[in-house]
Picture 1 (tube, each protein chain N blue to C red):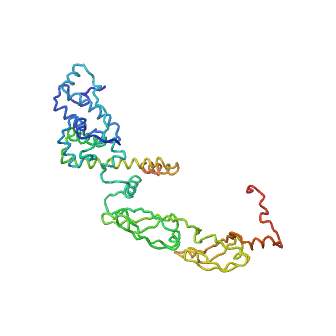
Picture 2: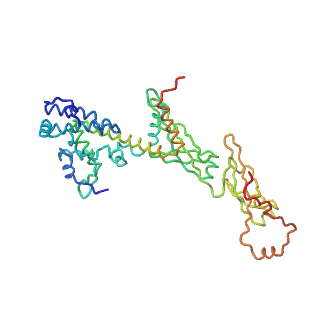
Picture 3: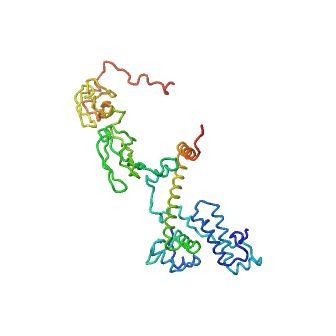
Length: 306
Length: 116
């Protein structure tokens, strides 16, 4: 329990005006809605407020002076205060127009938190703007251009270089935030996600796919059509091929870009028998191979030896 | 969320609040409660804001010219605090490795440079 006169710093015979002035002076310094997160200010204001409400009521003040009541029990019921609401998501209703996070906020916050360039004096480079986009596998391999719609309503034409990889960052110089005091604009940084393809996979500059072939195509060989990112091409399957045979199409992988030469496309054959017709079944029943090697020979260990 | 309360309830609840003052604050859009059935519907946050403006005006003597400036600065302060809190929560929820790295970066930025 604190003496309300001490709390407000007024004499015991202070007039109402003096008490009010003392309260206002202290409230300006310690009002907790003006000092969010400052527990000392909040505790101080509680005392100041209780003292003022006791001493500003002539009847209560007289009873206190006579010792009939003490300084406690005068605290007003605690209402939901502004700071209780303002820091919750609900508080955004009265937000300063900032709305959700923007990349600028993050840039600025991290910039100042981590000692990066604050806006002090002289010319400064504009902030980099971060975006992300998702492109298709073939688009990433072959390259192209995309028009990005920006949150601010603007657009950004992005050239996707051939051979772009998943997770790659594209930098568009001067397409970020404007500089200040005559400084250069920042860059736009675009993180690219590449969606996986249904049958192509990528290994650096090379592309792989599993190519289904018929039994006849594998055994007898022949021309087959192979899809590539640049369009279908014809390829000769040599006679005597098998499931797992890997054929290479030179230069049909990722196109040459920068210092990287064009990659190759590797097609791994997968013999597909499908529904055997009666003639094939009849042939196999009457067929005695010259050799009968066990295709499962050697598959004995249950664990890979270390 | 509840239905909210009418302007009469707010006036009764906030000691010393004059109806004319509150109606002017509504007209100035310092307080922006929901509307329903041709009247205002005040929720907890709206009443807290009424109480804040009332205290700013009657206890801290912020006049009507200065009030928009004070409210705007307060709103920006609480925006910043909400964002800071969201950031802190995101850091707290991050996996151990990245979280530690971020916290170390923050600590390092706050330490004075090492003297060699």
